[in-house]
Length: 376
Image (cartoon, rainbow, N blue to C red; front, side, top):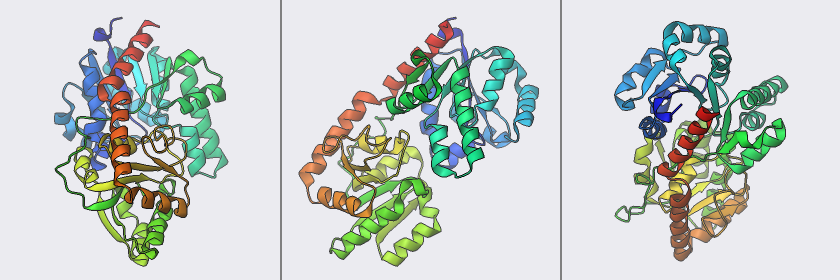
């Protein structure tokens, strides 16, 4: 089958909807790839879990077709899918997941209708669950789902080479069936803007979860304050709504501006107002926010952990530090005191992103995988 005759149906992550994407400000970014792919395919369906509320986003989809459901338990969701969208399922040539968490439904459809399946994940569900849960049953369930998904898929996609190595070693899979397709960056949107004045020393964008290590970041800024170095810091995202974070800012008497959630395509305006971007996480998958900041020619500080060290080459495309507050504070101090280093790291970061992660480059990789699956 030629790619131009094929229909692709993308299954959203469990409980995730177009409204979810809109609420956290990423809907334009997430749709960009599928709008690009829709030029080459006969049709693209999005199976989402926002119910009727997702219909209000139809104008943003272009030629893409939304098939909204409500996620409840597996059997109910499958029945609802069959009752509402049986013709669309029958006409689909390739099914695709957005993450492992939510792959149960496309796995069932694959078996029932003998469809091709691409299992894609931005982060490894098994590792993510191990980091977040102490319940053995929850961890076992996550590992089993991930194993089943990659084993039964016609092709698996991960976002980095280190994830591919784990999947191949853990599940004893054919190397030809696991591809690395990184996250993409809208480099024409996320770009440097010399006309924007610098207002902040430091910017963080993201959630307020333990994974992000914001506690040690705030301790680092407090430590610098005691050294008579006052840091102006802007925080963007759902981290701004965490009461614990707000309390630490108050207790430490820090100069922090909380911006809350900002639509993805508006982020370059605030990124370009800062001198340094920082991501002090304990672990990451393939963080889009880091790539987007690098694309804006920001000198970036990241912790020397999996998911960050793969893209930050120390003192080349950014600055790596440890996860403790003293190491973080030292990194901030070094870069703020060296404007030539800021310029060099920012320039190298932008060139690195342009060479590896542009939407055009990543969409071509996606098209090649679809063609390979159709031919298999």
